[in-house]
Length: 133
Image 1 (cartoon, rainbow, N blue to C red):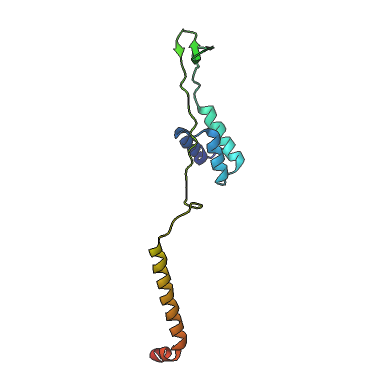
Image 2: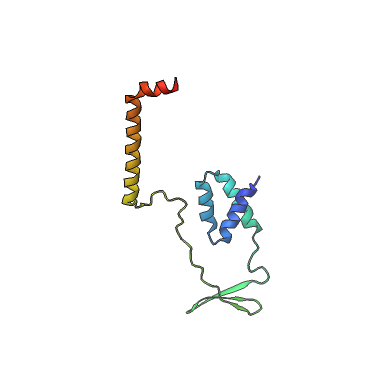
């Protein structure tokens, strides 16, 4: 049985310009089972309409590139599709962040105050317990 959530995710990824293989790898890396991903991809491929169903295409190569002619004589010049290999950062893990000196100074001062409070609790524990008891 084909999982509809995987099918929907693969369709959405391909609509955004990602290849089906890249989308499948993304789902596999996310922890989905390989056979479930393959079933969903097969159902997507079966439901996609064929581009040239009405007439057989005759391909001929010219100096300017590939030109396709249909049986009715129409010339179709396909556009080049550039791969979209953009790197998307999901989290900031692995990216070096610069911290300002003021942040370090403030955190150091807070740590010093907390250490002084802890030491005073040990020193004056009898007087503090006398206040509560």
